[in-house]
Image 1 (cartoon, one colour):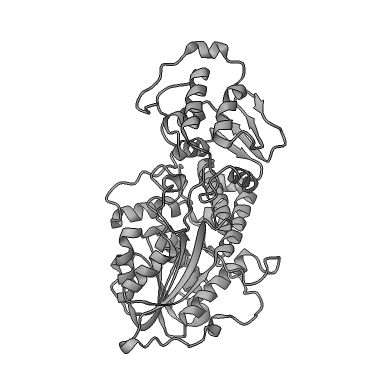
Image 2 (cartoon, rainbow, N blue to C red):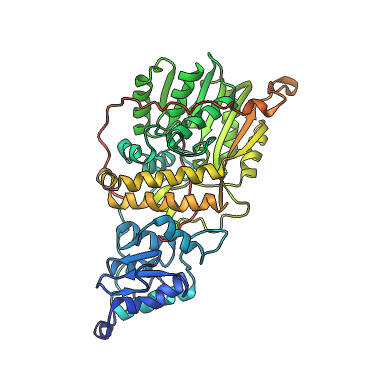
Length: 480
Protein backbone atom coordinates (compact mmCIF):
# COMPACT_ATOMS: atom_id res chain seq x y z
CA UNK A 1 0.00 0.00 0.00
CA UNK A 2 1.30 3.44 -0.87
CA UNK A 3 1.39 5.60 2.23
CA UNK A 4 0.44 8.61 0.11
CA UNK A 5 -2.99 7.15 -0.66
CA UNK A 6 -5.79 7.39 1.91
CA UNK A 7 -8.09 4.37 1.53
CA UNK A 8 -11.83 5.03 1.52
CA UNK A 9 -13.44 4.24 4.86
CA UNK A 10 -15.69 1.18 4.65
CA UNK A 11 -18.69 2.17 6.76
CA UNK A 12 -20.08 -1.38 6.64
CA UNK A 13 -17.03 -2.51 8.59
CA UNK A 14 -18.36 -0.69 11.63
CA UNK A 15 -21.64 -2.57 11.46
CA UNK A 16 -19.92 -5.92 11.08
CA UNK A 17 -17.58 -5.31 13.99
CA UNK A 18 -18.05 -7.67 16.95
CA UNK A 19 -15.18 -6.50 19.17
CA UNK A 20 -11.87 -4.77 18.62
CA UNK A 21 -9.69 -7.50 20.15
CA UNK A 22 -10.92 -10.07 17.61
CA UNK A 23 -10.08 -7.68 14.78
CA UNK A 24 -6.63 -6.99 16.24
CA UNK A 25 -5.72 -10.68 16.71
CA UNK A 26 -4.19 -11.16 13.21
CA UNK A 27 -2.15 -7.98 13.65
CA UNK A 28 -0.79 -9.11 17.02
CA UNK A 29 0.13 -12.50 15.53
CA UNK A 30 1.86 -10.88 12.55
CA UNK A 31 3.85 -8.42 14.65
CA UNK A 32 4.71 -10.53 17.69
CA UNK A 33 4.41 -14.07 16.42
CA UNK A 34 1.62 -16.46 17.17
CA UNK A 35 3.31 -18.04 20.20
CA UNK A 36 4.19 -14.90 22.17
CA UNK A 37 2.34 -14.89 25.53
CA UNK A 38 0.55 -11.53 25.35
CA UNK A 39 -2.58 -10.10 26.89
CA UNK A 40 -4.19 -7.33 24.86
CA UNK A 41 -6.83 -4.94 26.15
CA UNK A 42 -8.56 -2.65 23.64
CA UNK A 43 -10.37 0.65 23.95
CA UNK A 44 -13.80 -1.00 23.83
CA UNK A 45 -12.91 -3.20 26.81
CA UNK A 46 -12.47 -6.37 24.74
CA UNK A 47 -9.47 -8.58 25.57
CA UNK A 48 -7.23 -11.11 23.88
CA UNK A 49 -4.84 -13.66 25.38
CA UNK A 50 -4.23 -14.99 28.91
CA UNK A 51 -4.74 -12.32 31.62
CA UNK A 52 -1.54 -13.34 33.40
CA UNK A 53 0.72 -13.11 30.35
CA UNK A 54 4.09 -11.43 31.02
CA UNK A 55 3.51 -9.05 28.10
CA UNK A 56 0.58 -6.71 28.81
CA UNK A 57 -0.49 -4.35 26.04
CA UNK A 58 -3.31 -1.84 26.08
CA UNK A 59 -4.60 0.01 23.03
CA UNK A 60 -6.36 2.98 24.54
CA UNK A 61 -7.49 4.64 21.31
CA UNK A 62 -8.12 3.83 17.65
CA UNK A 63 -5.53 6.52 16.95
CA UNK A 64 -2.87 3.88 17.60
CA UNK A 65 -3.91 1.94 14.53
CA UNK A 66 -4.09 5.07 12.40
CA UNK A 67 -0.53 6.00 13.43
CA UNK A 68 0.63 2.52 12.41
CA UNK A 69 -1.23 2.79 9.12
CA UNK A 70 0.64 5.92 8.07
CA UNK A 71 4.00 4.90 9.55
CA UNK A 72 4.03 1.07 9.57
CA UNK A 73 7.51 0.99 11.06
CA UNK A 74 9.32 1.79 14.27
CA UNK A 75 8.22 5.43 14.08
CA UNK A 76 4.54 4.51 14.02
CA UNK A 77 4.88 2.35 17.12
CA UNK A 78 6.91 5.09 18.81
CA UNK A 79 4.23 7.70 18.13
CA UNK A 80 1.48 5.42 19.41
CA UNK A 81 3.46 4.63 22.56
CA UNK A 82 4.58 8.17 23.37
CA UNK A 83 1.09 9.59 22.81
CA UNK A 84 -0.41 7.01 25.17
CA UNK A 85 -2.49 5.34 22.44
CA UNK A 86 -0.50 2.14 23.08
CA UNK A 87 0.69 1.25 26.58
CA UNK A 88 2.95 -1.47 27.96
CA UNK A 89 1.91 -2.62 31.41
CA UNK A 90 3.62 -4.53 34.19
CA UNK A 91 7.38 -4.93 34.41
CA UNK A 92 8.77 -3.34 31.25
CA UNK A 93 12.09 -5.19 31.37
CA UNK A 94 10.21 -8.50 31.55
CA UNK A 95 7.93 -7.45 28.71
CA UNK A 96 10.85 -6.44 26.48
CA UNK A 97 12.61 -9.71 27.32
CA UNK A 98 9.56 -11.56 26.01
CA UNK A 99 9.54 -9.52 22.81
CA UNK A 100 13.26 -10.24 22.48
CA UNK A 101 12.48 -13.91 21.99
CA UNK A 102 10.71 -13.21 18.68
CA UNK A 103 13.11 -10.50 17.50
CA UNK A 104 16.36 -10.60 15.56
CA UNK A 105 18.96 -11.51 18.22
CA UNK A 106 21.42 -9.06 16.69
CA UNK A 107 19.13 -6.07 17.03
CA UNK A 108 17.10 -6.88 20.13
CA UNK A 109 13.45 -6.39 21.08
CA UNK A 110 11.12 -5.22 18.39
CA UNK A 111 7.88 -5.81 16.61
CA UNK A 112 8.30 -7.68 13.33
CA UNK A 113 7.66 -5.12 10.61
CA UNK A 114 7.29 -6.88 7.27
CA UNK A 115 4.76 -7.26 4.50
CA UNK A 116 2.41 -9.44 6.55
CA UNK A 117 2.42 -6.89 9.39
CA UNK A 118 1.62 -4.03 7.02
CA UNK A 119 -1.21 -5.98 5.44
CA UNK A 120 -2.59 -6.83 8.89
CA UNK A 121 -2.53 -3.14 9.88
CA UNK A 122 -4.46 -2.15 6.76
CA UNK A 123 -6.96 -4.98 7.15
CA UNK A 124 -7.67 -4.08 10.79
CA UNK A 125 -8.04 -0.38 9.99
CA UNK A 126 -10.46 -1.05 7.14
CA UNK A 127 -12.57 -3.47 9.16
CA UNK A 128 -12.77 -1.04 12.08
CA UNK A 129 -13.53 1.87 9.77
CA UNK A 130 -10.90 4.15 11.34
CA UNK A 131 -8.88 5.07 8.28
CA UNK A 132 -8.25 8.80 8.01
CA UNK A 133 -5.62 11.46 7.52
CA UNK A 134 -2.29 11.20 9.39
CA UNK A 135 -2.38 12.42 12.97
CA UNK A 136 0.13 15.05 14.11
CA UNK A 137 3.12 13.53 15.91
CA UNK A 138 3.42 13.84 19.70
CA UNK A 139 4.96 17.06 20.94
CA UNK A 140 7.92 15.10 22.32
CA UNK A 141 9.14 14.24 18.80
CA UNK A 142 12.26 16.17 17.79
CA UNK A 143 12.09 18.65 14.94
CA UNK A 144 15.67 19.65 14.22
CA UNK A 145 16.49 22.04 11.42
CA UNK A 146 19.67 23.28 9.85
CA UNK A 147 22.71 21.55 8.48
CA UNK A 148 23.69 18.26 10.08
CA UNK A 149 26.86 18.58 12.20
CA UNK A 150 26.53 22.37 12.34
CA UNK A 151 27.07 23.97 15.74
CA UNK A 152 23.54 25.39 15.81
CA UNK A 153 21.92 22.03 15.05
CA UNK A 154 24.18 20.27 17.58
CA UNK A 155 22.98 22.69 20.25
CA UNK A 156 19.32 21.99 19.35
CA UNK A 157 19.91 18.23 19.55
CA UNK A 158 21.50 18.56 22.99
CA UNK A 159 18.72 20.83 24.24
CA UNK A 160 16.05 18.34 23.10
CA UNK A 161 17.43 15.68 25.41
CA UNK A 162 19.10 17.54 28.26
CA UNK A 163 16.94 20.58 28.86
CA UNK A 164 14.08 18.61 30.40
CA UNK A 165 14.64 20.19 33.80
CA UNK A 166 17.31 19.41 36.37
CA UNK A 167 14.78 18.17 38.93
CA UNK A 168 13.60 15.52 36.47
CA UNK A 169 17.16 14.28 36.06
CA UNK A 170 17.67 14.20 39.82
CA UNK A 171 14.75 11.78 40.11
CA UNK A 172 16.31 9.43 37.56
CA UNK A 173 20.05 9.79 38.17
CA UNK A 174 20.10 10.30 41.93
CA UNK A 175 22.13 12.84 43.93
CA UNK A 176 25.37 12.37 41.98
CA UNK A 177 23.69 13.61 38.79
CA UNK A 178 26.02 11.47 36.66
CA UNK A 179 24.54 10.48 33.32
CA UNK A 180 26.90 7.82 32.02
CA UNK A 181 27.94 4.28 32.91
CA UNK A 182 28.76 3.74 36.58
CA UNK A 183 31.64 1.54 37.75
CA UNK A 184 30.58 -1.30 40.03
CA UNK A 185 34.00 -2.37 41.29
CA UNK A 186 32.22 -3.79 44.33
CA UNK A 187 29.20 -6.07 44.51
CA UNK A 188 26.02 -3.96 44.27
CA UNK A 189 24.15 -3.78 47.55
CA UNK A 190 23.02 -1.45 50.34
CA UNK A 191 26.60 -0.34 51.06
CA UNK A 192 27.54 0.16 47.41
CA UNK A 193 24.77 1.32 45.16
CA UNK A 194 24.41 3.52 42.11
CA UNK A 195 25.70 6.67 43.78
CA UNK A 196 28.86 5.03 45.08
CA UNK A 197 29.43 3.36 41.70
CA UNK A 198 29.17 6.69 39.89
CA UNK A 199 31.81 8.25 42.13
CA UNK A 200 33.96 5.15 41.65
CA UNK A 201 33.75 5.82 37.90
CA UNK A 202 34.94 9.39 38.39
CA UNK A 203 37.88 8.09 40.42
CA UNK A 204 38.67 5.48 37.78
CA UNK A 205 38.86 8.19 35.11
CA UNK A 206 41.05 10.37 37.31
CA UNK A 207 43.47 7.52 37.99
CA UNK A 208 43.72 6.63 34.32
CA UNK A 209 44.46 10.26 33.49
CA UNK A 210 47.12 10.34 36.20
CA UNK A 211 45.68 13.49 37.77
CA UNK A 212 47.85 15.38 40.25
CA UNK A 213 47.50 18.72 42.06
CA UNK A 214 48.05 21.70 39.81
CA UNK A 215 47.23 19.95 36.54
CA UNK A 216 44.85 21.65 34.11
CA UNK A 217 42.03 19.35 32.97
CA UNK A 218 39.33 19.69 30.29
CA UNK A 219 36.06 17.77 30.55
CA UNK A 220 34.33 17.66 27.14
CA UNK A 221 30.60 17.26 27.72
CA UNK A 222 30.78 17.91 31.46
CA UNK A 223 27.07 17.43 32.13
CA UNK A 224 26.09 18.54 35.62
CA UNK A 225 29.69 18.81 36.78
CA UNK A 226 30.23 15.60 38.72
CA UNK A 227 33.63 14.74 37.26
CA UNK A 228 35.15 18.23 37.32
CA UNK A 229 34.07 18.81 40.92
CA UNK A 230 35.33 15.37 41.96
CA UNK A 231 38.68 15.93 40.23
CA UNK A 232 39.13 19.39 41.74
CA UNK A 233 38.15 18.27 45.24
CA UNK A 234 39.95 14.93 45.44
CA UNK A 235 42.88 15.41 43.06
CA UNK A 236 43.60 19.13 43.35
CA UNK A 237 43.38 19.97 39.66
CA UNK A 238 42.19 23.09 37.83
CA UNK A 239 39.23 21.92 35.74
CA UNK A 240 37.32 23.37 32.80
CA UNK A 241 34.01 21.75 31.88
CA UNK A 242 32.14 22.47 28.65
CA UNK A 243 28.55 21.65 27.72
CA UNK A 244 25.99 22.81 25.17
CA UNK A 245 23.18 22.74 27.74
CA UNK A 246 22.54 25.95 29.65
CA UNK A 247 20.62 24.05 32.33
CA UNK A 248 23.55 21.70 32.90
CA UNK A 249 25.97 24.62 33.08
CA UNK A 250 23.86 26.47 35.65
CA UNK A 251 23.59 23.37 37.81
CA UNK A 252 27.32 22.59 37.55
CA UNK A 253 28.27 26.13 38.59
CA UNK A 254 26.01 25.95 41.65
CA UNK A 255 27.46 22.53 42.41
CA UNK A 256 31.05 23.82 42.31
CA UNK A 257 30.12 26.55 44.82
CA UNK A 258 28.30 24.10 47.11
CA UNK A 259 31.24 21.68 47.09
CA UNK A 260 33.79 24.42 47.75
CA UNK A 261 35.71 24.11 44.47
CA UNK A 262 34.40 27.10 42.53
CA UNK A 263 37.87 28.65 42.54
CA UNK A 264 39.22 25.62 40.65
CA UNK A 265 36.29 24.77 38.38
CA UNK A 266 35.17 26.76 35.34
CA UNK A 267 31.98 25.77 33.51
CA UNK A 268 31.32 27.02 29.98
CA UNK A 269 28.47 26.69 27.50
CA UNK A 270 30.73 25.94 24.58
CA UNK A 271 31.15 23.65 21.57
CA UNK A 272 34.29 21.53 21.64
CA UNK A 273 35.26 23.08 18.31
CA UNK A 274 35.42 26.50 19.95
CA UNK A 275 37.91 25.66 22.72
CA UNK A 276 41.15 27.45 21.87
CA UNK A 277 42.83 28.06 25.24
CA UNK A 278 44.93 24.93 25.51
CA UNK A 279 47.15 23.30 26.36
CA UNK A 280 45.57 21.00 28.95
CA UNK A 281 47.47 18.34 30.88
CA UNK A 282 44.59 15.87 30.56
CA UNK A 283 41.23 15.62 28.79
CA UNK A 284 38.18 13.56 29.76
CA UNK A 285 35.35 12.92 27.32
CA UNK A 286 32.76 10.82 29.11
CA UNK A 287 29.70 9.88 27.06
CA UNK A 288 30.05 12.79 24.65
CA UNK A 289 31.56 11.21 21.50
CA UNK A 290 28.20 9.57 20.65
CA UNK A 291 26.92 13.02 19.73
CA UNK A 292 29.82 13.80 17.38
CA UNK A 293 28.90 11.69 14.36
CA UNK A 294 31.09 9.59 12.07
CA UNK A 295 31.80 12.44 9.67
CA UNK A 296 33.08 14.65 12.50
CA UNK A 297 35.22 12.07 14.35
CA UNK A 298 38.43 13.19 12.58
CA UNK A 299 37.74 16.80 13.59
CA UNK A 300 36.86 15.78 17.14
CA UNK A 301 40.04 13.71 17.53
CA UNK A 302 42.30 16.33 15.94
CA UNK A 303 40.89 19.11 18.12
CA UNK A 304 41.44 17.16 21.33
CA UNK A 305 44.95 16.22 20.22
CA UNK A 306 45.79 19.87 19.57
CA UNK A 307 44.47 20.89 23.02
CA UNK A 308 46.71 18.43 24.90
CA UNK A 309 50.23 19.09 26.07
CA UNK A 310 52.85 16.58 24.87
CA UNK A 311 52.64 13.67 27.26
CA UNK A 312 49.04 14.57 28.10
CA UNK A 313 46.40 11.84 28.31
CA UNK A 314 42.89 11.54 26.89
CA UNK A 315 40.22 9.29 28.40
CA UNK A 316 37.47 8.73 25.83
CA UNK A 317 34.45 6.95 27.34
CA UNK A 318 31.83 6.12 24.72
CA UNK A 319 29.11 3.65 23.77
CA UNK A 320 29.87 1.44 20.77
CA UNK A 321 27.82 -0.77 18.50
CA UNK A 322 28.75 -4.08 16.97
CA UNK A 323 30.83 -4.02 13.75
CA UNK A 324 29.03 -3.63 10.45
CA UNK A 325 26.68 -1.06 8.94
CA UNK A 326 23.99 0.38 11.23
CA UNK A 327 21.18 -1.14 9.15
CA UNK A 328 18.40 -0.51 11.65
CA UNK A 329 19.29 3.07 12.59
CA UNK A 330 17.41 5.70 10.60
CA UNK A 331 15.32 8.82 10.86
CA UNK A 332 12.30 6.60 11.52
CA UNK A 333 13.87 5.13 14.66
CA UNK A 334 12.51 5.69 18.15
CA UNK A 335 15.95 6.74 19.41
CA UNK A 336 16.57 9.33 16.71
CA UNK A 337 13.14 10.95 16.88
CA UNK A 338 12.56 10.88 20.62
CA UNK A 339 15.80 10.33 22.53
CA UNK A 340 19.03 11.38 20.84
CA UNK A 341 18.45 13.25 17.58
CA UNK A 342 21.48 13.00 15.28
CA UNK A 343 23.26 10.67 17.69
CA UNK A 344 25.51 8.08 16.06
CA UNK A 345 27.15 4.96 17.44
CA UNK A 346 30.25 3.48 15.86
CA UNK A 347 32.21 0.28 16.48
CA UNK A 348 35.05 0.68 18.96
CA UNK A 349 37.57 0.10 16.17
CA UNK A 350 36.32 3.22 14.38
CA UNK A 351 36.87 5.37 17.46
CA UNK A 352 40.33 3.91 18.07
CA UNK A 353 41.21 4.44 14.41
CA UNK A 354 40.13 8.10 14.52
CA UNK A 355 42.23 8.75 17.62
CA UNK A 356 45.27 7.08 16.10
CA UNK A 357 44.88 8.99 12.84
CA UNK A 358 44.93 12.22 14.86
CA UNK A 359 48.29 11.27 16.38
CA UNK A 360 47.25 9.67 19.65
CA UNK A 361 48.85 6.48 20.93
CA UNK A 362 46.18 4.21 22.42
CA UNK A 363 47.50 2.66 25.63
CA UNK A 364 44.53 0.93 27.24
CA UNK A 365 40.98 -0.15 26.40
CA UNK A 366 38.48 -1.35 29.01
CA UNK A 367 34.93 -2.55 28.43
CA UNK A 368 32.30 -1.58 30.99
CA UNK A 369 29.38 -3.24 29.19
CA UNK A 370 27.99 -5.18 32.14
CA UNK A 371 28.39 -2.11 34.35
CA UNK A 372 26.10 -0.12 32.07
CA UNK A 373 23.36 -2.74 32.26
CA UNK A 374 23.42 -2.40 36.06
CA UNK A 375 23.41 1.39 35.78
CA UNK A 376 20.40 1.45 33.47
CA UNK A 377 18.40 -0.94 35.61
CA UNK A 378 19.02 1.37 38.57
CA UNK A 379 17.84 4.38 36.54
CA UNK A 380 14.68 2.55 35.50
CA UNK A 381 13.98 1.68 39.13
CA UNK A 382 14.45 5.34 40.12
CA UNK A 383 12.06 6.54 37.42
CA UNK A 384 9.37 4.00 38.25
CA UNK A 385 9.64 4.76 41.97
CA UNK A 386 9.10 8.47 41.24
CA UNK A 387 6.74 8.12 38.27
CA UNK A 388 4.04 10.61 39.25
CA UNK A 389 6.57 13.30 40.09
CA UNK A 390 8.47 12.65 36.85
CA UNK A 391 5.27 13.18 34.87
CA UNK A 392 4.59 16.41 36.75
CA UNK A 393 8.07 17.72 35.93
CA UNK A 394 7.98 16.84 32.23
CA UNK A 395 5.00 15.10 30.64
CA UNK A 396 3.54 11.59 30.54
CA UNK A 397 4.95 11.20 27.03
CA UNK A 398 8.45 12.22 28.06
CA UNK A 399 8.40 9.87 31.04
CA UNK A 400 7.30 7.01 28.76
CA UNK A 401 10.15 7.82 26.36
CA UNK A 402 12.68 7.57 29.16
CA UNK A 403 11.24 4.37 30.62
CA UNK A 404 11.30 2.59 27.27
CA UNK A 405 14.68 3.88 26.17
CA UNK A 406 16.45 2.97 29.41
CA UNK A 407 14.83 -0.47 29.75
CA UNK A 408 15.58 -1.31 26.13
CA UNK A 409 19.14 -0.08 26.53
CA UNK A 410 19.70 -2.27 29.60
CA UNK A 411 18.77 -5.35 27.56
CA UNK A 412 20.96 -4.17 24.68
CA UNK A 413 24.03 -4.02 26.91
CA UNK A 414 23.20 -7.34 28.57
CA UNK A 415 22.79 -8.96 25.14
CA UNK A 416 26.08 -7.54 23.79
CA UNK A 417 24.28 -5.54 21.10
CA UNK A 418 25.80 -2.41 22.60
CA UNK A 419 29.10 -1.91 24.38
CA UNK A 420 30.74 0.93 26.28
CA UNK A 421 34.48 1.39 26.37
CA UNK A 422 37.06 3.58 28.02
CA UNK A 423 39.93 4.25 25.62
CA UNK A 424 43.02 5.74 27.25
CA UNK A 425 45.33 7.50 24.82
CA UNK A 426 48.37 9.75 25.10
CA UNK A 427 49.85 12.51 22.98
CA UNK A 428 53.47 11.32 22.70
CA UNK A 429 56.34 13.67 23.34
CA UNK A 430 59.28 14.05 20.99
CA UNK A 431 60.79 10.75 19.78
CA UNK A 432 57.69 8.91 20.95
CA UNK A 433 58.14 9.26 24.71
CA UNK A 434 54.79 8.50 26.33
CA UNK A 435 55.52 9.05 30.00
CA UNK A 436 53.23 6.12 30.78
CA UNK A 437 54.05 3.48 33.43
CA UNK A 438 55.31 0.18 32.02
CA UNK A 439 52.77 -1.86 34.01
CA UNK A 440 48.98 -1.73 34.09
CA UNK A 441 49.03 -2.37 37.84
CA UNK A 442 48.63 1.36 38.50
CA UNK A 443 45.19 1.22 36.90
CA UNK A 444 43.92 -1.21 39.52
CA UNK A 445 42.62 0.61 42.57
CA UNK A 446 43.42 -0.80 46.02
CA UNK A 447 40.45 -1.98 47.98
CA UNK A 448 39.03 1.00 49.83
CA UNK A 449 35.78 1.75 51.66
CA UNK A 450 32.88 2.84 49.48
CA UNK A 451 33.23 6.51 48.52
CA UNK A 452 31.10 9.05 50.29
CA UNK A 453 28.30 10.51 48.22
CA UNK A 454 28.36 14.30 48.30
CA UNK A 455 24.93 15.83 47.85
CA UNK A 456 25.41 19.48 46.83
CA UNK A 457 22.97 21.94 48.34
CA UNK A 458 21.75 23.40 45.08
CA UNK A 459 18.86 25.80 44.88
CA UNK A 460 16.30 24.16 42.63
CA UNK A 461 15.61 26.11 39.50
CA UNK A 462 12.24 26.11 37.73
CA UNK A 463 11.91 22.97 35.66
CA UNK A 464 11.21 23.30 31.98
CA UNK A 465 7.99 21.46 31.26
CA UNK A 466 8.73 19.76 27.98
CA UNK A 467 5.93 18.66 25.71
CA UNK A 468 7.13 15.60 24.49
CA UNK A 469 7.27 1.35 20.65
CA UNK A 470 7.41 -1.35 21.39
CA UNK A 471 10.35 -1.49 18.93
CA UNK A 472 13.61 -0.53 20.61
CA UNK A 473 16.60 0.39 18.48
CA UNK A 474 20.13 1.27 19.45
CA UNK A 475 20.43 3.47 22.49
CA UNK A 476 22.91 6.28 23.12
CA UNK A 477 23.99 7.82 26.40
CA UNK A 478 25.08 11.33 27.20
CA UNK A 479 27.97 12.45 29.30
CA UNK A 480 28.59 13.13 32.93
